[in-house]
Amino acid sequence: MTNVIVVIGAGSIGQAIVRRVSAGKHVLLADIRQENAEAAAKVLFDAGFNVSTAVVDVSSRTSVHALVEAATRLGEVSGVIHAAGVSPSQASPETILKVDLYGTAVVLEEFGNVIARGGSGVVIASQSGHRLGPLSSEQNAILATTPVEELLSLPMLQPDQIKDSLNAYQISKRGNSLRVMAEAVRWGKRGARVNTISPGIIITPLANDELKGPRGPGYRRMIEISAAGRAGTPDEVGTVGALLMGPDGAFITGSDFLMDGGVTAAFWFGDLAPK
Image (tube, rainbow, N blue to C red; front, side):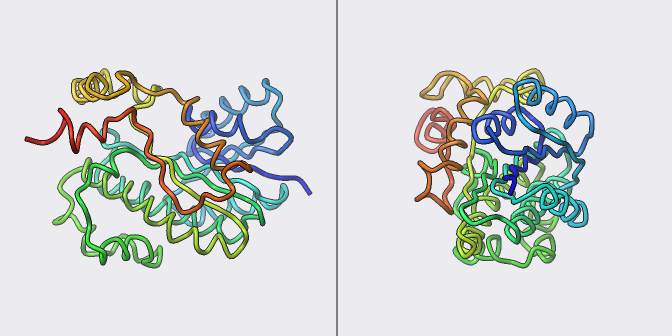
């Protein structure tokens, strides 16, 4: 049976991971915009990959379920790369919670129902999830295990509790890593694994827009003060993604991998620490 790798989000990071794990497999590349999916698919096709496209809105369970059905018609889903999302400068707190928090939970649940034995998944979270102060054990548990359709009704996620788009993004990304930890238990019962990667500033079209926008000075300061002294590349995230999805990562599941060049370390214990 054909092995299918599903990529949700046709951006640079999803492409970098899929190029490393999909030789000889069928790639189903899904994005909210058909033109984005087709442009990325052409690059992959021209590089020798077997690829098809789909449109998906991760904030809609109906849409995600349709993607699952399209994937299973192609073959056995052996890999899922979830790299779709919106950033604080792109959307309102409500939209960020719906796409980044709820949408990720839906993807994990729907694909967790069909992931093949020996399969694996990677969710792209963010260094922002590591900027949030500690949550209580009760808050951790409810973000990780609340039934998906009840998530957005949680008191801690209501407008009077969420300060702004950045706060919504931080809690969504923290929620992603917690939800993956809980889902790793369920995926494990199918003999599959799932992890998160929390990248820092990775040079993509979105990051370039951020560097030129109102948040640009803050981005540049993070880069300058970090131990690495530079931004990251999609290929570096791809390398970690390939480890997590491949045989060398067979003992890794339910984990979150922070790769930000040392920005979070500087935020908590260095020159970026809040005064």
